[in-house]
Image 1 (cartoon, rainbow, N blue to C red):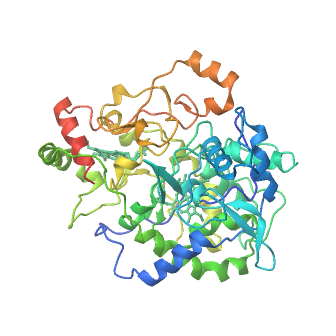
Image 2 (cartoon, protein in one colour):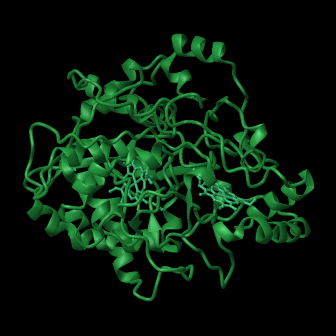
Image 3 (cartoon, rainbow, N blue to C red):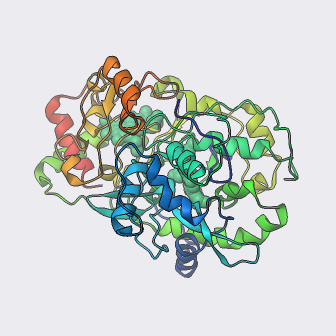
Length: 462
Ligand code: HEC
Ligand code: HEC
């Protein structure tokens, strides 16, 4: 039902990676970190476009006609229209100058290098989020309805959205970035020359939560399966496979090295509410005894092990880990993208992520199917079908269980909502869907409720 096609508006993304690196990262971005490059990277990422426009300027103004709620008049009140547009597709105000567009949309680049009036999506459509009314570059966008965004803008442009190749998202806030990358690379040969007939690579990813960028500096390996070198520059350039030639990729590599440095400079926002320090101190002990062996330690001498946990131990939904088929990895590894950082051909499971800023990144797990930290730590309490918050405002934030306030819904209610309104159905998560199971990670189940609450208090401090 909620499908869209691939096109160059489907940006990013690799979902596979490089050989497992040596033992333990020191929890810093490394000695070679270059602040001047990070500043150039910030400018490149937030102020410069890399792709041709996908939609004409009027598509932004007329998409409102396709909504199932009344749209403010674009000409009379552009700010109200933009706010409604942000609400409809789950976008956030840009915390940088962006030509009047929400974060995640950006004016495209004409063949002569000038700015087009038409526009595109960029990295921040998935990696730019907000919480408590503040936008952050690098916070995963947990509101995004990417399928509807692409479909509506194309329709508003007077074109028929291309036939669906895979499910982009069934619920808001998750996207099938893995399939986007897989489809784009299947349309290139090893030397990156274009193919008309896609290579049969057999990838089968489902939708995913976007990880916070501020975690990258602690990681040695990245992506949920930990098979890619976390310092790889070229992996972040795959989103341009819709249009760039090998030579253009080579020319842009230094810019994307700067972008990587910018990503390595990001810090998580601090928990903005009161923390009970005594409770948190007790929670620290619970954490070192039960969690640190996988998730590392925090504070000045924090160490993070970049540990990849086998699927049978972690027990979370296997679709993402198994979706990177051997043929996909093998093909990727023959291309320029993998020359310096080949993907580790061996699949193990999921990497235990660093938990810095974890308070701000609900819902949890790689598929965004657990609404609170409390539910992560008591697997029996996880809802099977539940609501996503109407916005990322603090009125929807649960400071006790830490994460999003939610309500469990029945299968019947879910089906009735889907019949009534695609917009409202986007706010419902159904963990019975492919790739969306929320079992596993049972490491908090044996804790007493007091220990669990102490641990949650500690997690607020990270
Ligand atoms: C369509 C949504 C989407 C877009 C657009 C997107 N990403 Fe991502 N990104 C994701 C998802 C989902 C993941 C997790 C993928 C996985 O591990 O399988 C991810 C992972 C990453 C990671 C690894 C983070 C980690 O800690 O493991 C980096 C780095 C990254 N993206 C950078 C970028 C950059 C740079 C751009 C723009 C050039 C971009 N992404 C565009 C969705 C997106
Ligand atoms: C055996 C290793 C292991 C242990 C022990 C462990 N975890 Fe995890 N944890 C993981 C892995 C792997 C994931 C990622 C699973 C996924 O996304 O499918 C994860 C995910 C999480 C997440 C979600 C992260 C996110 O960004 O969505 C949280 C929160 C978390 N763990 C907290 C804890 C706490 C607290 C403890 C201690 C009670 C703990 N974990 C114990 C391996 C472990």
